[in-house]
Image (cartoon, rainbow over all chains, first blue to last red; front, side):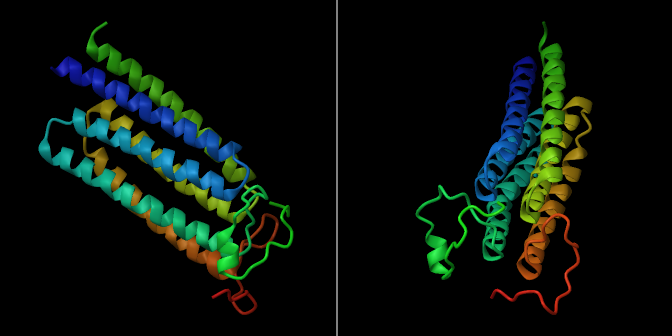
Amino acid sequence: MSGFLDVLVGVMIVIGALFAVVASVGLLRFPDLYTRMHAASKAGTLGSGLMLLALALEAPHLDIFTRAVAGVVFFLLTAPVSAHLLARAAYLTGVKPVPQTEPDDYSRAIGVTRSDPEGER
Amino acid sequence: MSATEFLEICVAISLALLVLSFALITIRIVRGPTFADRVLALDMLVSVGIGFIAVIGVKTGFYLYIDIAIALGLVGFLATVAFARYVMHCGDVLGGESAMCYGSDSEKQR
């Protein structure tokens, strides 16, 4: 039983680290801020959450388990909030998405016309 | 190969992958064309650091590390919120410009 738990924890931390690597590759390779935000806030949170759950399974005590699960729930709650705040602040201060994001509803909602679709960003 | 040896190998592999992830995020922090890119990469760096602390906790068996991970997550979230408000009030500070917000002539968006 303990051996099975060790194998499960090993597989979970390797998968979590792979998610972290995929998220950082996406952070490096995607063309603008708003697509990078998808990679960082989804895959990054999933990776660290998997590694925290692996630590929760490895720990023999119930208090460590509940603390780790509470940490995972906390990260799942706060990651979309911070991503939304940062995206909204960046959009309102003029960080342009790539021109391929064609139905750009938010620019119409706030009354901003994208004058130069390929600026410096 | 016993299960404990398998866990040791998995810990080594995941630590190496996390170091690679740290390196890629650092490249994005250095290169990031806008200030918001750098803030996003710092948020991601905190998230990967939480995973790193969890893997170190599995490796050493010292489970008090999970409190450090939760505290780091809280601080990282508050730092990202504060940086987002900074971007909102001071505009997007490009690289090469001064990072100071002078407040008087910054554009008031809302």
